[in-house]
Length: 385
Image 1 (cartoon, one colour):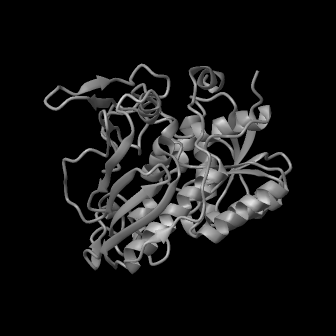
Image 2 (cartoon, rainbow, N blue to C red; image 1 turned 135 degrees about the vertical axis):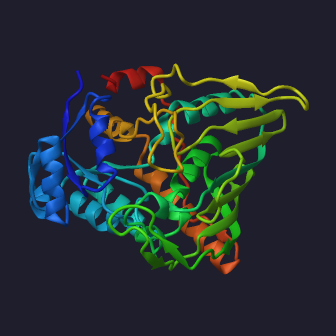
């Protein structure tokens, strides 16, 4: 029987709701206390979910808490994770690991020194869509992957988020930090570590208008580039063209396409858990569909349009599985799949992509990582309720 780990939540914003939902799917995690730099947010969260609200300092010192769930804004990820580790807590953070490589590397060093686990979103690559894609690639169904394309492009979060300014701020804003982790984590899991990156940048509309909430119709200044066009070369030799943009009204391209010497593959949305994989092995043939809706982490559990314009209206969403899988790994002394080494490598690609695109100069990736092993059915069943 799995141990139920007592989790302390720091950062009671919009995403926290998703992790409370995760408790109904997974059998080894329980959020028992919460904290927020704005204590009123913690009190509201505590009332809704019938848990206790405390200060951030109290939560970090609380001996009952075994794992800190770090859902703060990106620029606070490093400090909260660092303090969690210093206080003897395992930590699982929202993406990205930190907003610069140096801080991310420091977190891994602290964790190693204190024999603690670091887990980090995204965990969407553990879902049916990316796992089925990985299975087919491991079987060499399209041969050696030589080329590919990945795209995330939509108008920006200002249409559906009441406080969109952080997504457009100078240091932690832009689509590479926001959506890059989903695409880059999926690509690393499918193709292996990256080696270098080149690119260019486009600066879109300088002012944006909030489309929802009490500040609706208020304009704010955009302080960062909003479109990044990059080329990533992986250690395997695979070359992927990546578009990450907050400046596109609509498009009809697939999220990820991979082109091998024996065929082509369409990979489903890396921001979600399900979706079908499609393969074509001969010019003119129909695309063969590999469904994932009967896989445990591919079953549809979203039946209505998400409030997030960039999410599929009908899909599978099992966010929190990375936290649960880390808890199981702690109990069984295993390497967790959403681990610090993987997250640091993705952070390295994020930072290198931004530098390459802004400067126009090729950036070498400083780190590497071991690709997590596929998430087996037996492993999944052990943590599901």
